[in-house]
Length: 356
Image (cartoon, rainbow, N blue to C red; front, side, top):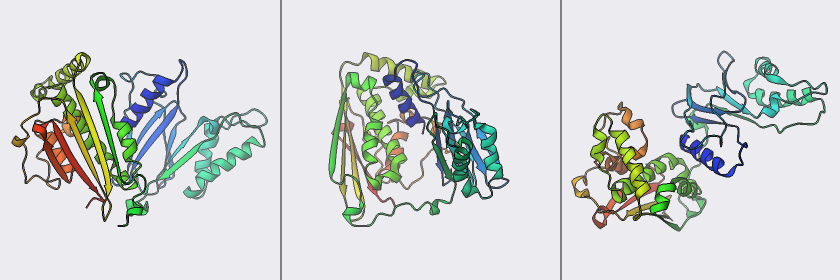
């Protein structure tokens, strides 16, 4: 979610004229652990309606709109909230609150809150908002568009996720394809290829449920190729009290001074008798590394990581994992097969779906 917000803000910052920005809100629902993450930037409060007790919890805007701040200043942090089955989130544009009647009065937040308290069944609230706004306007012309979104927390089994049959036609999206993308010195310093690549991967229906896993895997492979292959950064920098700060300062300096080197990503997808197979190959122009030191043939993605899961390092960005050993363990767990080639300058990871 934070990556999406960063990317949207960055793109809008580049293309929008000065003084023009995009107000928005984003909510991520996790149906596995019954929680939501909320980001609000410049739009009316997002409402969380609690079915038990029929209470409304507002989430006010705590961020500037998208496209206002430079990427280095943008804050993608969210507010996290625990939900129960039946709880609902509501998002709307200001066109609802600012709708006016023939007497030029605004609908306002108080009338909106009364819809929640005065509607008998929670499933009827969505339509009740639209109906009462229309009744309030009484035929007046709209000054603004009206957008209304709601989503309800349910059990993961109730969502009705698509099941994939064994025939090739059920894959959906592109079936047999290969993509190759090479980034050279200046592009490595200025461009993140992951959103572009993920956009293509999510066109394959069978890969969509694996979006988070694939992003983490790609981020690990790419950052390792860039930082330890092309830039030849030493992971030992991270071990001291100020290690991470020094590491990323050196990373930025090395990128700014980079005049040679490249990273190539090659992705191949093909159908199998059941589901499909994605082959990710990342190659860099670095000196390689002695992967045999970490190449434990008994390591599989089903084995637990040899890391304390309570360690907050697990919550840090994927770029902080590396070829000092832990990164390889993570990559192995996210892949069905992992192979190193060309003295460690190339790595091939294979992911098959559906996952078992």
